[in-house]
Amino acid sequence: MKRIAILGSTGSIGRSTLSVVESYPDRFEVATLAAGKNTELALEQALRWKPRVVSVADESDADALRARLRAAGLPEIEVVHGAAGTVRVATHPEVDFVVSAIVGVSGLEATYEAVKAGKTVGLANKECLVVAGELITAESHRQGKPLLPIDSEHNAVHQCLRGGRLDEDEKVDEVDRIWLTASGGPFLKTPKSEFASITVEQALNHPTWKMGKRITIDSATLMNKGFEVIEACRLFHMPPERVQVIVHPQSTIHSMVEFVDGSILAQFSVTDMRLPILYALTYPERIPSDLRFSVMDLRHLDFYPPDMAKFPCLRLAYEAATAGGAQTIALNAADEVAVAAFLERRVGFDDIPRIIEQVMTATPAAHLESIHEVLVLDTEARLLASEMVEQRRQKGSPIRAIS
Image 1 (cartoon, rainbow, N blue to C red):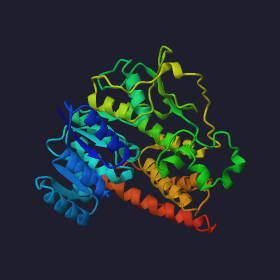
Image 2: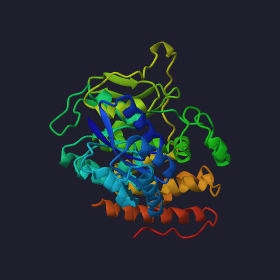
Image 3: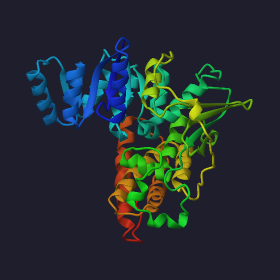
Image 4: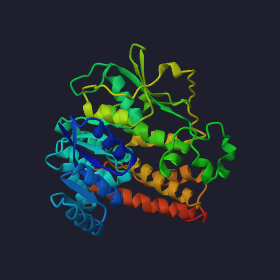
C-alpha cells in the first residue's frame, strides 16, 4: 500500500490524483492533503479520505475546519496551515509518495523538503524546477530517490527514455535529443504585425486545451513550452541545445526521444492527466487501466519549427536555461507579473516578452545556494517586473537592477 501526500489537493491535478486512488483502493491510500484556500472542498476531501493531516492557507480557516471535523466525529485529523503546514503534509513520516501540484512557487519549499526527507516526488508543478531545479535535482540525487514527472510532456519523455541505457549516474547515454511538442496556441498563424492588438479574450481562447488563465496565456506566447525546456534540461540532465521544441497542432504526440543511432520513440495516449499520474504512482511498474487511445482515430500529424522571432518568450527561456540560476528565477517571476498585468489590461500582449527581457537583463548572473535565497530573489524580480509594467506607461524611466 503506497501512502500519498497531495500538495494542491483541490486543484485539477489533485482531484485527478484522488480519482486514481479511488480506482485502485488496494494500492494507494491518502495520507495527507494540502488544500489551500478552498476550505469547503478540503472538508469534503477530509471527510471522504480521512487523512492524518490536512493543511489550509490561513489560520482562521484551519480553526474553522478543525471545528467542523470535530463536529463530524473526526477530531483525530490534524489541521495545520500556511507554508509550515504544507511542509508538514509533504514530510509526514507515514508518507511514501508526494504529488507536487501547487501552482507557482508557493509549493517550492514543501517540495524541496519532501525530497530532502527522502520521499519519492511526482512533479506536476513547472515552477519548482524552473526556479530551483538545480537545488531540487541535486538533493534528489543525494537521497537516491527519483523525481517523477507528471506533466504530460515530461512524463512522455520519461517513458521513452526507458528505451535507452542508463549510466552509473542514471543519465541516459544513448540519447541524442529530446523533442517537446507544442500545439502552437491560438496565434500560430497570426502575423506578428497583429500581436499588439491581441485582446485578452483572444489570448484565452486556446484551440486545444482548457486550462487556468496564466498557463493559457503562457501557451499563447509559447512561454509554457519554454518552461518545459528548462524542466527537461534539469529532469533529464540535458543541455538546452539538445532539447528541441516542435509545433504539433494536433497534440497527439506528447513528446519524442531521438537516440544516437537515429531511432526515435514517440509517446501518445489519451489526453487525460490520470494516465501520467498513474504512471508516476506505480513506477517502475505498469498496471492495467481503462485509459485507452484509439489508434484508428489517427488521421494525419503536422509538425512545424517554432518561430522564435514571432514568439520571443521561447527564445528567452532558452537563454535562461543556458544561464541557469538567477536567470530562470527572473524569467518565471517576470512572466507571472507580466501575464497578470496583461489579464488586467494594463499592458499589451506584445509587452509580455519585453517586460521579461528587461527584468532578465537587470538581474545579475548568480547561482543560488538555498531555497531561501531563491525565494528572496523571486520577490525582488517580481517587484522589478511590477516597475517595468508601470514603465510601459511612462517611457524613459531608468531601469533599476537587482542588487
